[in-house]
Image (cartoon, rainbow, N blue to C red; front, side, top):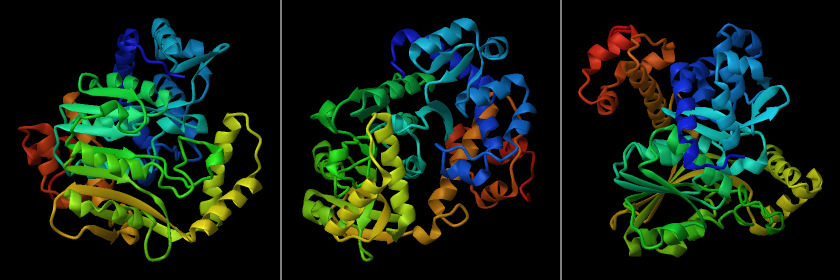
Length: 444
């Protein structure tokens, strides 16, 4: 388990150099199915022929992917010969990122995930570490983040710190807060890994406690949202029996910190007409405090076996990690009891935006669930463009001039004005550089 200390900064930066020199982000992108690369950064979706494909990368790159993406055991001697020096390996072991297993080496349930131009160490595979995990919801919050300008930001439930890393591109000061010590340690490590440690602070604490009395321009949050009986006490996945335990104090607290904008993953339960969150927002009387709320419904469905089984899998894993003996049937029974008690039969995927404005509709609900795919959703098209552009910029900085794009990716630039690329690259001439880097012309 990672335990950050400034003495490891040189080792973390040395690891970054390895990732950059090996074009780690491009390696992972080429090995993943394109659709899932943009929607599930925390999941590995490799094809069946992954071993053959890895062997064609060369020994150094193969070891890099197996160790830091697949979290596989690899031969220690091979790593020392082709990838990392013995001293660097020892430092990363002392940091808690790597573990010795006899003559093998592996990560301690960590993966390094290329995420919109960042390298994010995140936890995988075990519910012990769900608190430092990256999932699709992080992408959704990130897309809303790119729509705003802000000089200070607060990331509540910061996890591995990926939202803080992204916010640091725009803000002069970012604070990440998480109640889980491991998440805070991983976040601090990631700040160094991405050269933004001078703009980010991470604190271990409950909600707004570490930033009491401070005002911020923006608040972002991807907090737990699973409705679960209190007896399970799973802080990293559960938000109380109604699924609102974190959302209520989060909304209450934001008024004291006076953000101009807030983007929160507020997934939860409800009925066919609306989620339970609507009643909570009405109780908060947002307009009387100068705020308006917008609920973007990115998914919606009946509570059926697939939904319940996903929750059960998460709970079983967490209980197993803590050495607790509980059956699948018991969890299903507890979940069905909660749904009956709350009188809910639908689940909602929600991006909750709360903005500082006193006019307009107090609570607006917009259903975008039928457009939640890369071909139709404007926000997801935007995030994909950002990711591609981040790669272009990274390559330009390395002096490279070719990038292979698929047809669907080229389509983005057919209608793109190039504003985003110009914003990221300063005085670059969009058309000239785009043609140079992509190896294409404007007609595609």
